[in-house]
Every structure is written in structure tokens, then in C-alpha cells.
Figure 1: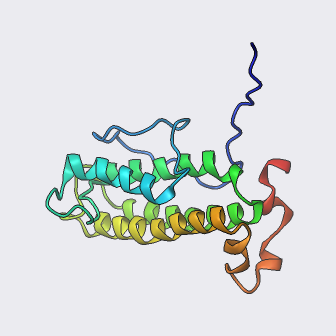
Figure 2 (figure 1 turned 180 degrees about the vertical axis):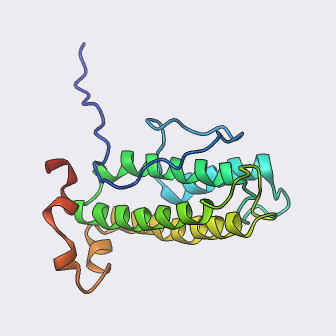
Length: 179
């Protein structure tokens, strides 16, 4: 018996590279395994729980975990990998908006972590790491919730993204694989 399974095609959106640095001590999914589907909220919470289990705080199960600069980079990379894997499954216009939101977040995180020379500094020890973690927390919430909305009401994320969306929604941005 043969099965017709197509290989998964990752999202072709551009301009988000890996945040380079030493590996995290937290066990994380590979680029091919990373996903936030089928339940983005639960998958995101599980990912944060992995960091909380290693770094704490253990007494505050809903708090953003303590992270080092290396952890912040690893967390951001896993979300990028998950979006590459998951965005082909949703509305093309919503995928473009979610990708753009995450791209902007990664640019900000990269800028915050650029001056950090010690990858072991945590968000308690470094204002730059703390600011990067705040960005990951708040912007990550927006990306995660946008993914949830897109799964429930395809096209709704795009409709609410911005008033100039018709100019923003270039063919290259909406269909990055075709270009």
C-alpha cells in the first residue's frame, strides 16, 4: 500500500534569518518539527513551560520565563521555524501579515541583543535582554493570537491589519513562493 504524502513546503517569506549565538540548554524542536498548530495557544504555552522548567520562575506558572540572551535567541528561532512550517496552512493574506509582524519583532529583538556580549546574561541582569524578552512576550502574543484568528476566520487578520493594506499587499508579499 502506498501513501501519497507530499513533503511539507515551508513558508517562503523572506528577511528573517536565524538569530545566531550559542545553543540554549532547553530542549527544543528542530526546524522541521517546530509548529504552533493545531492549537497555537497551547503550543506557545508548552514552549514557554520548557524554558520555565529550566530557568524559572517555577512558582509563577504564567510568568514569562527567565531567559538568557542565548535562550531569547533560541525561543525566537523556534517561533520563526514554526511559522515557516505553519503559515502555508492558512490564508495567504493572513500569512503575509503574520510573517511581517514577526519579522518586525525579530528585527527589534536583534537590535536589543546586539550590544549583549555575554550570552549567559539573563533578563534579570541585563536591560537589553529584558527588553528583548518583553518584545518576544508582547509581539509573540500578537502573532500567536493572529494565527488563532486566521484559523477561525480566514482573511480577518489581513482585513484588520492596516488601512493601507491594498498598497502593502504586493504580489511578492502575499505569494512569496511564486516570485
